[in-house]
Amino acid sequence: MKSNRLNQYNHVVAIGGGHGLGRVLSALSFLGPKLTGIVTTTDNGGSTGRLRAEKDCIAWGDLRNCLTQLARRPSIGSLLFEYRFNGESELTGHNLGNLMLMALDELCVRPLDAVNLVRTFLNIDTRLIPMSEEPTHLVAMQACGKSVFGETNVDKMQDTPIALSLDPQVEATNEACEAIKSAELIILGPGSFLTSVMPPLLLPRIANALAQSNAEVILIDNLTKEPSPIADCSLAQKISWCHQVLGLKIIDQILCHGEHSYQDGNISYYPLRSSHHIGLHDRQALADALSYMVSQNTCLADVNIESA
Image (cartoon, rainbow, N blue to C red; front, side, top):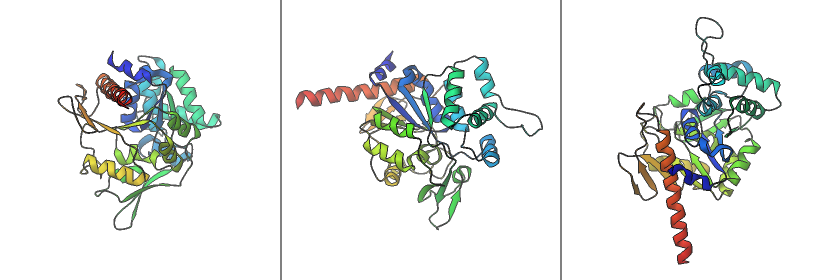
């Protein structure tokens, strides 16, 4: 199996949120405890947004989505965790997984403890860490000087913001920073660039951990044009924007979908689209593409060592 080439790493970290990070984690779940997901916690829409407004908790939705995609199926646990209430009541629209995480958080000392309890319940080996254990919101600055508050509003913007920030500015989770520092491979995306990929990178301690890391960093691009204010930006513009926000260059390689496999500089193209949905990466294709990319790097490093 080609994806076994990734087993050379003792610690792989994937950063992001939403369905994209969950897809990557499930594609690489064969790595077990060698894989860590650092999850965005700025969502303020849907069931998650309602819980945040009522309980002033972190955003549970992206964590729940990652746990759901990593859970072994079929199982009673996964069915319960995915259940969404219907009908006409105060529970309508709420996801049972979000409610379980919130309840466990109130019983535990830390949100991370709640996540770990659910991992045990669902028999998940992959580590999942919220980017912060304190509630915070994404804020975008417009060219006119006005601020747009909240992830859902940022996604609705017409023009690309000139800056992003978090309000309030919270501390990154210690375990997330340590995971990045010890990582040998770091994966960013896919997912909404502004609201899934960028929020964890806005935390100073995570940015510093990335600066100290010696890991290879791969960005996975989206399969389709995302419905967000950055939709009309080219891949190069997004990379430049990311590096400008961080104040350092971290992205070494980029993985994109292509009808045929080929490489153009630091951009690798592979057929990645799922046959079930045009916006979803095929899990096996994604694992194989990443495996091939890192094996090529290993071969190149061996050549450089031999010629030195």
